[in-house]
Length: 343
Ligand code: NAD
Ligand code: TYD
View 1 (cartoon, rainbow, N blue to C red):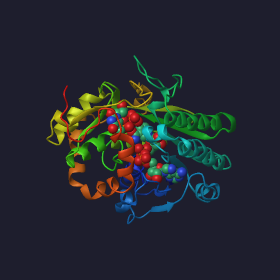
View 2 (cartoon, rainbow, N blue to C red):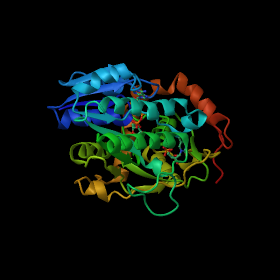
View 3 (cartoon, rainbow, N blue to C red):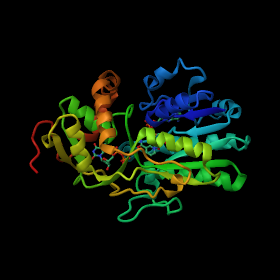
View 4 (cartoon, protein in one colour):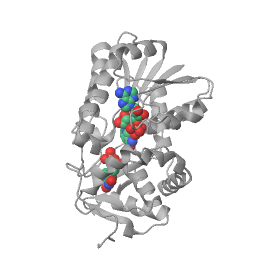
């Protein structure tokens, strides 16, 4: 078995590559990654010495390159994407290019090699905000921001290649992941590392937006389950049932690093901020997958990882990130480095 893991130098892709090299040592794993700001060779440095692991720097939109790499593989697992909602609100060109055009570029290659299984890694965000209830796999897509709209475009293309050309396509849609190696723009590593640097944490709006928190290793096991057992043409939700308002998760994060609620700054909300995501995950449960549970324990292990791995995240928060942070936060209503929160 030889698999191409695109976006494998990012957060989830690198955790997936690590899981596969450990649990399927007989497989050959090729990581293809463009190394955008979010891609980091350090995320897979420990894997480079492993037999059967190789790394290629390149773009999933490069048809010649993917045309070279894909035909020798048995499966493609596409993690490669632009992934941060706030960046998509600032400008969506790269999202449309990678998440839609890049997906199509690979599907076009797979089309001529129909024995290859293609797994598209997607998100609960494609269902949009749900005031009540939980999304099942055939719930309507109702993306609320340019990131989720681009991901929905990728999903629809992948499904259309299954229906039109019989490609062996499967899709996973997971909830918010957290764990080691997550780029510190996402809320959990941003808040953890801010506190470790003695900086406040900017909580959007009223802090009552709800996300379902899924430990990255659980998601990776889910992706592997769908890769091996998923039915062609089907979509599988992957969630953990840890639906919590952001303020509660923030309090748990602060607690995990010994900080108090004085570190919270309620800042101007994200435009179009989806209020609540929620997934029903009975379908993947029928394939034998279940989340491992213990959200508080997973969160405290994650906090310990960021505390112990400053050498990993400190370089990421210098340079371009400082400009990003200034642009994204410092002009925001409610943002302050100094004043304590007043309730
Ligand atoms: P990430 O931003 O950490 O990593 C994305 C990786 O893709 C990076 O290594 C980047 O260099 C690479 N990449 C970007 N554009 C590329 C291109 N054109 N060609 C090749 N490589 C490219 O993202 P992540 O959080 O690891 O997410 C991985 C996948 O999972 C994405 O498809 C995302 O939509 C999906 N997802 C993420 C979450 C989450 O909570 N993080 C939840 C659900 C779904
Ligand atoms: P994020 O990690 O950006 O993931 P997503 O938007 O894909 O769910 O954000 C998770 C939640 O945290 C979301 O409701 C927005 C909120 N959030 C903040 O309150 N402050 C922040 O600085 C960030 C980045 C996110």
